[in-house]
Image (cartoon, rainbow, N blue to C red):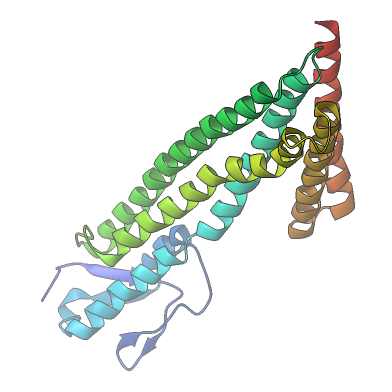
Length: 247
């Protein structure tokens, strides 16, 4: 079997005429650059079916080692912040009125989280599919082969669905945590105003925890980043509270 073209790879080693695993981790984008650089495998010399399958398997591994993890983390944190600030606004706007209604608060929190979850999940899925389809097209250009209905494309779709599912569920997870005090108010354990204050404290503590986590993962000061996120939450609450008082 000949392809009439040369396949170039980088970051790969030959062992016994076959491609070994990458000698260092890299993303699919880097891998596609590497594929064009160092290792030359003339298709006329790739008559061994096992070698060709090894090349395709290496390309599949490249896609599986894409930035799915970082994408999940990045989108999760972004959606968590969106959910937290949105719910802070809902709580301030519905729980601190003259005559707060518990059913309105609960219904608004749930429906708002539903809308944000669907919006985030759908938009992230479309964005991820677009990027991964582009990666696959570049792979196909590199090896002059159609990768449709292969493990490569299946892995790409699975990765996109995974990232989108996390974003779909994040607003519901955040809402579940913030709505617990109001569920207790429904049972008569606490009053509505007290439930609102407890929920706000949970929200601000969550923002601080996520900020601290971001600081530990990055180069910033974890405590400083946590305080900064907490401050943003507190300022958001105060602005909403002042607006509610003026209205």
